[in-house]
Length: 367
Image 1 (cartoon, rainbow, N blue to C red):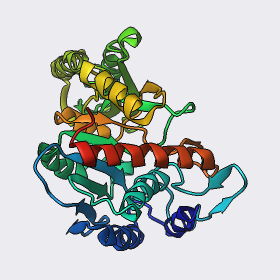
Image 2 (tube, rainbow, N blue to C red):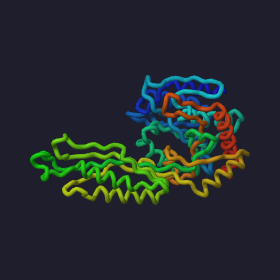
Image 3 (cartoon, one colour):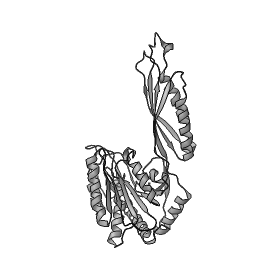
Image 4 (cartoon, rainbow, N blue to C red):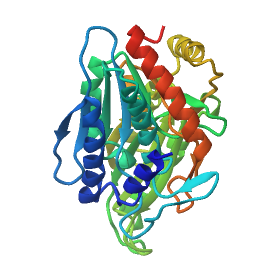
């Protein structure tokens, strides 16, 4: 398990999204590891975040596969910077989300190289800002997606080794409400209460939730006003939308616009900010056929699941690329100081990816 030594190297480098130096150090190690396997690297320099890195293998005619991961993690420097292991688990920031996942595909590619198999039509994209919403990299990912038929994403596997066939879409929005401030004692009737308007809008937003369809609207933050003796001249709502289908997305977005334009309290005005961060990743018949093909190639049963959380798989999927997520090792405690990943699942996932990559190279497809 020499790859665990390489995993330790990148775990011990703090790669908090806003720590550009650390993220770039991790990226440089992947440059060193992938270039000897025949990959050429293209860096997309960024000033405030780490550089995105795009690795290309030999370009041949036929189908193309993109392996997708991210370099960043969630803890700022000196908050959680450790690596240790026992017989069953490895522990540390990113062991499952998703430095461990990156190590899975790297080791699979190394295995092919050691067999003397020339790697072709399999490329790698490692972005640097996934943990903060991919606000910068999502545009790059969507543009590169045009060149690919398939995408495998190496976020953590499910408890039983499930891959991910669908993820909810997510959007984050704000509503800023303006009213008219007046003295609450002397001129109450002359005021226009922005806080009251916010309360009406909050209730209207929450009513858009449809749990049966997997749609949720959560107003996570509400603020406004000046003091108890003043009619509130302003209020602010911060809310999130999650959805499982394009139809639900369109329904809720239309309703949000109507809520913003409606003045429940006469004289108030409101403006909407924010938008969709990552569109929905929907399962399809083609997804199920791909899973069946993978089972036939590997001779193993491949369980799958849908998740409410999002990843960069949403971006590739919504761009029209056939996408599976959860190809990394199983782990838990991600985004906490208890993050860990199963050693056994590393072995299993590396073997799975090695078989898939070799079949894809030899046959030009997964069929």
